[in-house]
Length: 260
Image (tube, rainbow, N blue to C red; front, side, top):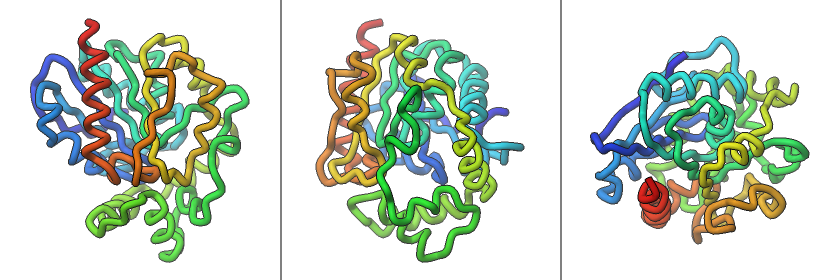
């Protein structure tokens, strides 16, 4: 299954933007329209059951990873960086062994699973977190969940997050919960290690979802040797602090692509 994508620009190198669970490619509007990235082709994809992509027969991280790999193979890109938000980092890592031309990963607000690193070990207890796994959460839980994703509760951002959540196939949330309960994920950490490509991790200073301490013991070759933290930002760091996020991404992209 291929994903619905939007394409802006015609640069020789590309940035692939992947949205969070229950989001859409609208998440990346302030990145794809930033002059910092005009030299690159900017491609945003909607995962199955999200945005403009049709539903899947079943939902799991490996299934979503295969859909991403199929789409990128169809696009036939020679050189690109994947920029992911939240769970999209897991999906990118699932797809990585099948990707040709991927030169780096820029993982924001996400975690990678594998070995002793599981959702239970890397996720903070979050009062409204069950909304990610419920087909039809209560309005109170949905509002609490969305508000907890950001540190800067701008009205426009919250309205977009809620609209995208409601537009997502409800079977995605229930299916994802069941799949994770069965332990259906690959060793994503190993996939990244074996790929040998640079990987950057970026978090908001007010991250409430992911405990990124696990990075102290895995992926010693991460970009610049550490996870990067942006002030006044929460889980969806690119929405809270788009300018700072874009500057860091531009540095990463320039560094990676200049080596080719």
